[in-house]
Picture 1 (cartoon, rainbow, N blue to C red):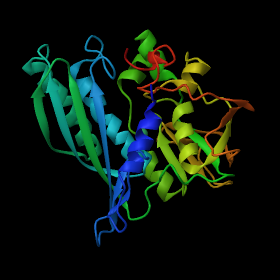
Picture 2 (cartoon, rainbow, N blue to C red):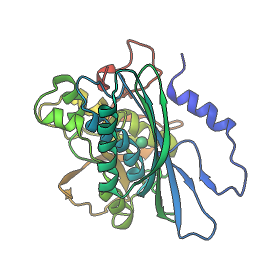
Picture 3 (cartoon, protein in one colour):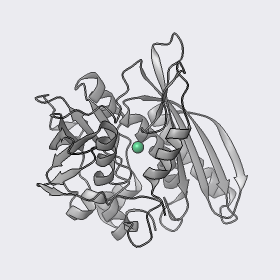
Picture 4 (cartoon, protein in one colour):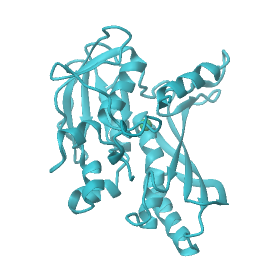
Length: 315
Ligand SMILES: [Mg+2]
């Protein structure tokens, strides 16, 4: 069975972007980049699926929480490319168990998150089906040519991560205490994303949706570099394993030119130097943790059962 990377790689090769197209970045980053003629801004587009049993469980996620989280996934991709949300489209497939009250509350969660981040809910689609399935498309804007991409990290850049990692996995496992809150209420790091562009001149960034190890490898593969890291800062009670491989953190991994002054805290969130980008030994994508190779064990939807760290998701 193929993995997520091989499927997207194949599609990327087939979905050729014609020369001169306003689509200046297609498959292979957190968002596609569209450059409207004459505009001071580039537009960012991302779409994320939100599936019952995979991204949320109806027993543990109240409808407002599920709605909020459905939108956060896309907002986090906009943050990773240093954009500002403009609008979103929400498509929802409603199963028999979800009554009108549940659906209303789901949209309350969507609308509150949208209002808090400036993302106008501009449309979508509604359908019926066997289980709850939602797709959220978010459009954001970023000053022309200034989106922070994942294919532009350079050897010698310093590597940072926001927040404390592993809390979302721990919260999913325990469903109690602060880790539970962490799992249920992720925050899109939109302010940090803008700060990385405006003040730190970050060279690359990605959000942690599938785990530090896997998402950092995505930066390394896209940039054709390697990385050397130390243990990332762990959420209280989380294991190193959870911090390295746990998904749904929605924190940002970013790189900055060497000697950039990075504050310890931004908007109450810790920023920690965890290592540096190194010249690729081969085609890139190798990560060393304390000088030992680190397997990218984060979440891959298509990995063989038994090898995937399924505890990182809701099932
Ligand atoms: Mg992402």
